Length: 177
Image 1 (spheres, rainbow, N blue to C red):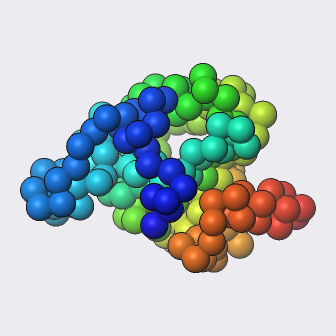
Image 2 (image 1 turned 180 degrees about the horizontal axis):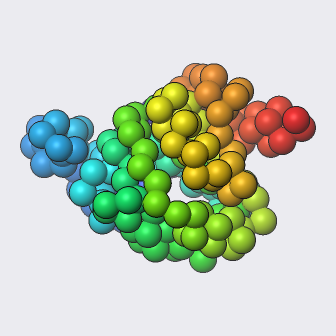
Image 3 (image 1 turned 90 degrees about the vertical axis):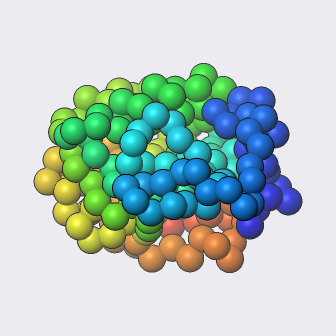
């Protein structure tokens, strides 16, 4: 989609730098569902990602997630934070946009890694297009103190926009409220 603007496997700062993908051999899966080869692992058994876009000058990235986010059993936030997010922060990324429409379930445990993540950046952590059951769990654990989600963030048509337009929309429309 935005591969004319950014290709993560060509980014020396990306976790999947130099990965080569087959369009014919599907090896990644969540449970017993095979996923397109361009989904990458950061260490979770049930949650995979695609680094769709990173802009080091504007200090933001857009990451799409798929699967089940399970902090209670798998400690997915620890893997996400240490393997994927921390290196991005070290490269200056301050705003994170996580596309959540393919995260089917979310099981929280505590907010320590979320709090740490929020304290380490000057920007925002946006979760867009999260499913209702995911938002319910996020609210149950009061993660709205660290993450921006729900409301108008669940109605963002991101596929037909350029990455910088998405960040501008999030910064101007969402943060004004």
